[in-house]
Image 1: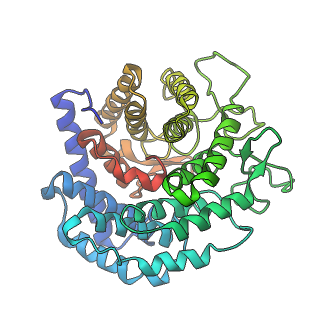
Image 2: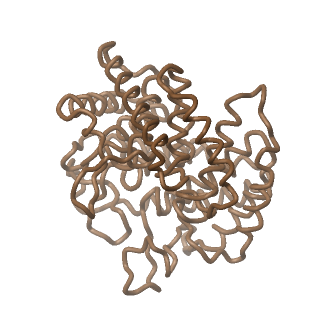
Image 3: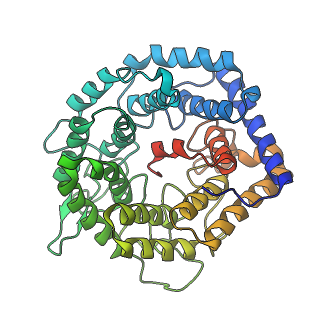
Length: 407
């Protein structure tokens, strides 16, 4: 990615924030207050931040705390559930990320047992569980894609592809989509669980399935099957843009769910930005310029929205202002455009203004249940993800975003 166009004073301020966040996360790990090991809200995600912070500046990380917590994480792997959010799929991704960072000492066999474990656990035809990424089948794709960079992952990816094939809805016009399973905890409509419900969020919906499939497009034996799924799903997604309020700059191009009149927020979890990101990536992979053109149109529309009409109420990667600075930077890398570049800078400056006003509390996470902001150390909603995003904005390394299906 091109260097972010901010002043040296702003760059120094961001560096100071990264240092502050690293201190707070280290203190949290040292205190034993991290009650679970997961990637999205637990120890694994906090270690991912400290690892990247160490690469950024070794002086700001307590190496003893990092080493002790990493050792404890590895010792407890056999006690974990399997999913991405709090389970083995996320923790193993982090371990492989660390493993690949040192090419001279890379151990390709480190997680062979996990590969086999997942291949057996996911081998159900048809797949009957969750299909989204946080708890479901698509959440095994980041680990598989990362492992595939240095080892053969045809078997595991074949299982994931087969599971998504078995759960897809195939329309007569060639479109393909995935409806939330009847018993999914992420269904909006829990009264009529047999009614098809097509979620439009990256975290829980069709864009996430597209993102999960993208790396498998590079596996020759799976290419034809994956191309069919990707093309059908992208065509379906493009056909389900909002038609109401068209041209109103305050409204989103896509809702959160097909058939809902609600406008989606700006963020990673739901909304126009990551839909644009996934369509652009798919367009480049499949050599379909129309996908990229549509993606750019959607992304530029999102440039017009601000905190109020984007429903921005905190800073985190999931749906906060620091996350937006990173997502616009990633979009500019995919589809270089001065408005996308400027919007990334806008959200960095917005983040610094909030920090000037409220200090560390500017980065507290907002709870919709409690209707209040509180300290959060996790990757998805809290300090760890905010720190990772700020580091990526300064050093242009966004490799960690693969765990969230953003690259």
